[in-house]
Image (cartoon, rainbow, N blue to C red; front, side, top):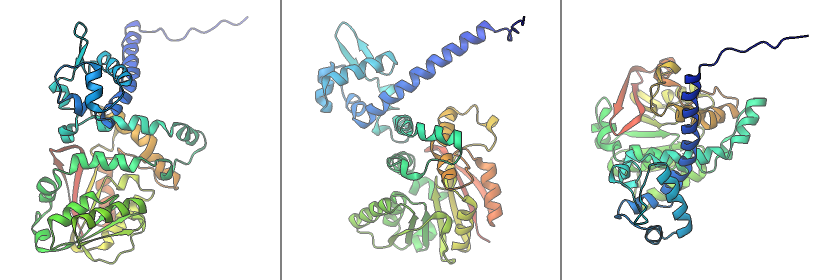
Length: 361
């Protein structure tokens, strides 16, 4: 007869604390979907302009169906996002909450990030398959990801690029005013590049990206703005193959997604003229997990990495850097590519990114 071996004795208090943590995780995941809906439908924007109102009044103001709005309000009341007066049957979005939930909040609008939960959930089964069999999930399985990235990136960068980011360059924006050649690698739909082209008409701008649909949006925006100093070229960031013809190259959250980031950085280095600068904007993180644990959004960062950034790279036989590849590894790779005078700067309007600035000797 065999005797069952008792497992380790459980700490009841530790179990209770973890149960509370799990409850918060489940409720937080559910509420993220409701927050995403509130952003996409404009409900938060609408409520931020209203006094306490009934579901019917809120639905009418937002142009939505009352029954859905009423159930949405119930979820957000239970989640302590909106406040409810049971006697009056009204709901209100406190201004202290609206300051973190509306488009008017600019870079402080956290509902933008809530959209990642539902978007990445669409590829959960694909990622599980990669867990089991290796490989990854390719770009074409994320048809909305680039649009969301453009929104969240522009939310952080749009109002600060000209006044706060470009002044970080060694000579500020004086060369751009005078006229230089600039490239943006992994430019997406080109919002940053189009803004620079419109602001600095004496400079010449080229956007490189592999996604032709995104480039078409960039071209359309340039045409609408009347900019004639900008072109968009379909090109893999890891295969730039450009001669040294640029004075400044930028990339915004583009390196860590690459299958072969070293090739991209080598291409950027080769495409710069001697003395040219590279502005590399990447997620703010350490390369060491334990140094990221106190970051408020660390779980979200590593989740996005698992569900998109890392797996997309691995899908193409890549390195799988991941979102949190970190400043130490970034400096190491920039140095390997040949860059010198590497500095890491911050931007108070963008708390989630590092701004790495370096130059070609």
